[in-house]
Image (tube, rainbow, N blue to C red; front, side, top):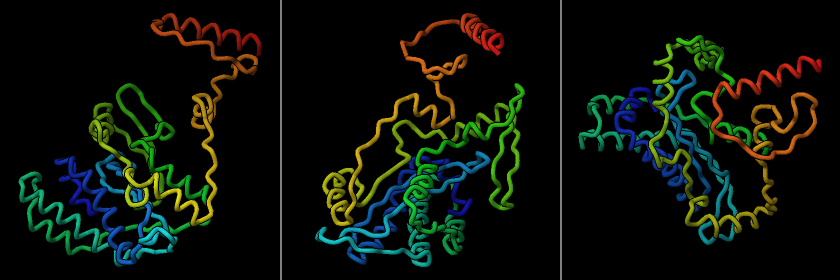
Length: 282
């Protein structure tokens, strides 16, 4: 969406849930013209890489779908040339309806200008590598506004982090006062109950249990049982540190329990003791 349309969505944040439905409806309309039911999920993001308010939506759709009688898996492709004007029309209508209802402070003239602009709708190239696809999608499904790895420095009054500038294609640093950084960050926290991820078509909650087994059978896909990953495995995958590995001898530790309520002074004494032992052992 053009940047002129971002502020109204911050002014009336309830409109964000409708944006996801409009995006899915755009794709489903084209699929239904071919009498195909596709699988769709969307991820709503309100942030840019520099934490500014930047509303955009990521949509993933299968390159095929079920026929009307659910007896066949039919291939389908979508065209930016066809999708862009359909998407633009739906968003502008949403804005016009909200403007007439007095929900957002925009002018009809501004909306008319945005309607006649060419919008940027990015279509990612399909891949034949499922793990690459899963990795790509995973970055958007649970992506926070700012990952910990991008934080570079905090001196008590200012926060510095790095981000990729899409216009230049180069990494640069952003430095903000603590208050400004917090304000930039918390504006992207969704309201309670707001669903960032939404499912449509074959993946819709009311039909997925019935339709997915049919899809698996038609495309000859064998579903592997889900592998359970515990908290220790998640920490190791995320941070590269095994919490059950002893920092002194490297042996595997057993989780015996957890203690709450200790003061910082008491915790510090444990840290000092461990550090001293490690130094002596070295």
